[in-house]
Image (tube, rainbow, N blue to C red; front, side, top):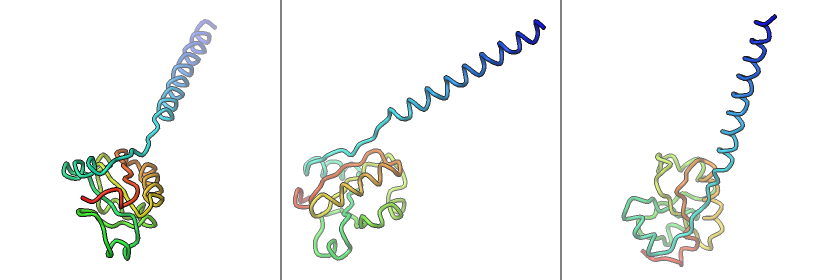
Length: 130
């Protein structure tokens, strides 16, 4: 009988310890909230020179008409599928822009969901000429 009580106590303690562990890790995971960072023109040029990837999320036609130097074109409607072809390391800084700032904001949110965590939104292309 004493052995049964000891086993019940031991199992209860193990269950309690592992139950708390799981809850704590979930809480830690949910507390980590990534957000899109704003960036200005001067900082964009500096970041690109340091290895950031500058992405124009407008259509291919808009990109062909004009774009910022060193920018690659990945339209917002395909960025989730195409980003891995250009940016494999999710810690690489990525700077996004478009015509008005709306598409770049949407693309930035999509990249955060994919696990990229150094995501900058320059907003409108007119904000910068590098």
